[in-house]
Length: 272
Image 1 (cartoon, rainbow, N blue to C red):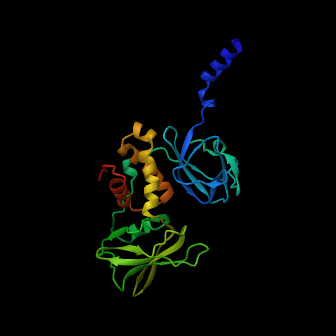
Image 2 (cartoon, one colour):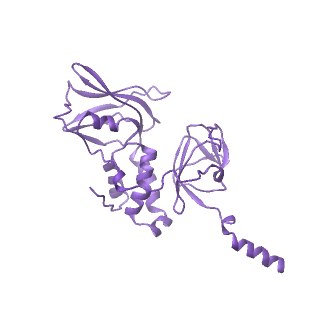
Image 3 (cartoon, rainbow, N blue to C red):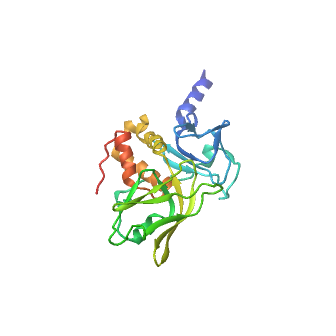
């Protein structure tokens, strides 16, 4: 009886050793497996879960309402990328959150491209396009017509799919032929005029369907742990915005807000 009491006292003194922390999968880029099944948005795992990465390019985005948001990649403690890496989640968690907070001042709007430098600032590095997104342009400074237009050049990795087209609209443009089945497009963007073409930027373009974005964002707003602790505005600024910046790169913020408001029914006021 005395021994049993000692064991109970030890267990009560160290509850973290008994209960594993829960983590929810926001997004699994690549082929990442648990017990032979690919991870997908919404899956719940613990820090004791064994994860298998199959490529050094794999990325696993996780949400813990209590601990924060994490980006897990197949990189060991020595900083080396490890293909076909099998590890317990707790051994792969970074020492600090990969994004902690977001401030209103950090939000990039890109609601209007005033000149070519604005377009250069957006179409570089990682860019995520949601089909249907239209970009506004000051056409007095950036003429857009049959003689002055933007064009992508390049092809998706290991694919015969063509690069997306660009359709000129009154006061702007949008992408066409955007295939959400392709992973990324390594592309160059050019501004074509009669006198030649000007390189705007080099980018990795990802095309993400509206349904995929809804699945990811609904996780933030619909988790009971989040709903019970935070307001929609807090979730948007402290969790969603940092995730979007890290996972999506540059994307149109109004499309993200539109999905939150129309598809998820969350009224998020944003400072202009």
